[in-house]
Length: 143
Image (cartoon, rainbow, N blue to C red; front, side, top):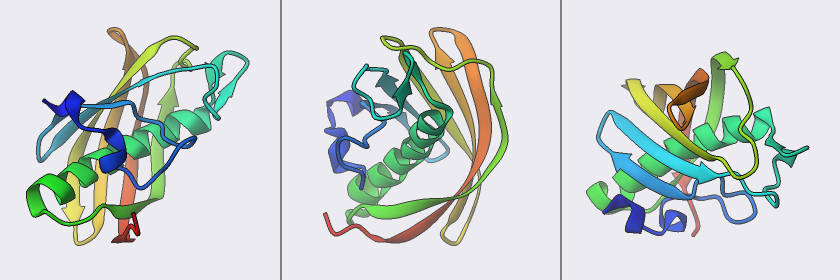
């Protein structure tokens, strides 16, 4: 069901800066998204997704969660979000071209328009990165 949703309906980002291919799962407290690492990805360097691209992918997983909530539950428009803090970033390895990255975020706390999440990034069953993010919601997107 979730995979059938056009990811561009949920994100304020537009190509070539879209770092999520599919929403895989959504609940109020946990969301999972996927991204296949392609050679033409703007964050690819030497056959790997750069750390900045990995962080952007995690942030866009948060954005997909918020986009789904706003569009399908609240029936409003997509809101912009901003990374307020990256905490305890632990990258065990960078994903390589051709790999499917699956990222799950778990909401730890929501206070007004700020959401604290814990994220785990996997390739297959291998955890390749973990972090915490603070995401601040902004205004509704003009899209």
